[in-house]
Length: 317
Ligand code: BDR
Ligand code: CA
Image (cartoon, rainbow, N blue to C red; front, side):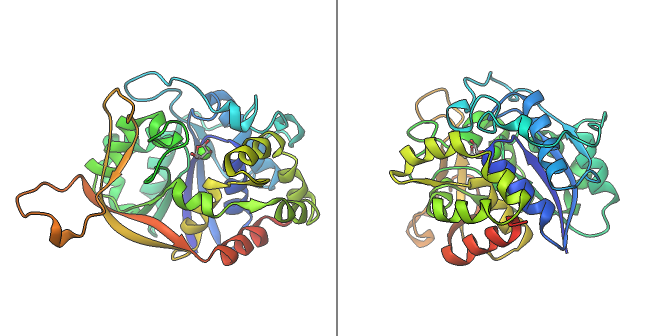
């Protein structure tokens, strides 16, 4: 059984990812924590609680975390992709939350769950990495309890929010650098290069809508997101980035990874938030030359049909 904490900023693809974890049998969803990102914190928190209510998971504690990045202000949100309320303007169509937000806050909730865990825990951050950087900085004692941090983020060959950066990393590059480069907890980075290749088409979505009340409610959250990704892909489909990362978090080995030395650009220029993966062959790098950052597993491939079937099975309720 996968023991899992999700840190999220819903977001349409976050909603799919959350539902996947909440509904997949055998997943022990210990907590959901929220962060600013696609929309402001208050809204990401409400959206996460409503998605859990949709999935009948009032048993899962939810706590709110960072409302802004560690150091510099957040230049803009992602309403252009996720709609005014983060869920294509349809958040209020979801059931109201059945459980109060934990007063302790995201970092304390994660630390408490990790502290009492008797089995290794996977953390799946699918928004900016602010809460995770704070957790590792403030509670180093829980690090041995973390099996892996499976992160949706980064762009190896060109970004989405800028020419070089992907939204989650760009939203708080200093936090991302702390987690990916300065810490030693095992990480898997699931970049948008791969999540784009895992896009689902409208036939997949229509089948999901027809699968049951939860599939239908998830489909209802997609109009604005579908409009955005139809332009981004050049064909009518959805890139459900975060669900790809959560699939790997709950079913390790779903994605094929390669280890690369990574670094995160934190300078204030056109490359801010870029993830730099050193893909040179190690034997071609001079001994004296510093490798960028530390080696991190980067997801590079998957069985696309099997992944789409796994997502469909998990969400069709
Ligand atoms: C990431 O940014 C957000 O808009 C999505 O929810 C996803 O986590 C993709 O770049
Ligand atoms: Ca997200």
